[in-house]
Image (tube, rainbow, N blue to C red; front, side, top):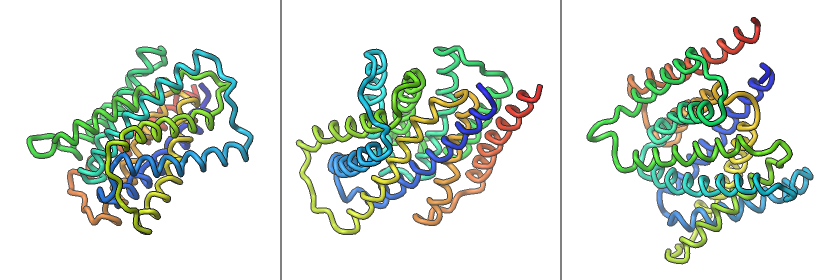
Length: 290
């Protein structure tokens, strides 16, 4: 992969993390006032309609896709459903920065998965940087009898689902439109939530809740789209550490929106996480100059 492709991938990853974290913030502001299934149905319907309109406007939507790619899209969609359920459940029961911090293990799981299954290069310096970032995440979470609860397990289950999703995306053919993959993922989550909603008593949606869910629908489109694009550009082992920028967003939004003041250890961990991403970028530049 070229330096240019890796740089684009890094930017796409940062954009994806910004969109997902803003979506998470709006969802958390609903504070469980709407049942999860109902929330996902409403958000999913709005997102799917907006994605369809955007895709048609850009002329970036078609379904002439090979059987193998449809299989990968199906696998990716199932993983997306699991990720939505586990992550949002954890999000509604944990501080934003904490649940986001647990997800920072993703660069390690995705990079190792790419090395194992796709034989992508993973040098010891990059691997060391990812592991160091993981240790920084542990400083934030500080797992223990009180810190590592059932909701932390839900967050780790979301990690497993997102890892499968990203690796499946990586195997998609280059001719598969990203907007098609994004739309199918949104429809899959909405359909699964619709099934769950049949056993859930719906509640009235106030104007405030409607605004929060509507805003989340807009940001989740960006998150979906950029998460598809990023797995198709550059080397996973280089791009993955930039997922850590989501933690920076979560720390800032957690303080500004929810009044959560990070502890000194949390700030140290966040600093380590950011430093690993910058070091990885530095190493890529050095290697490309040889």
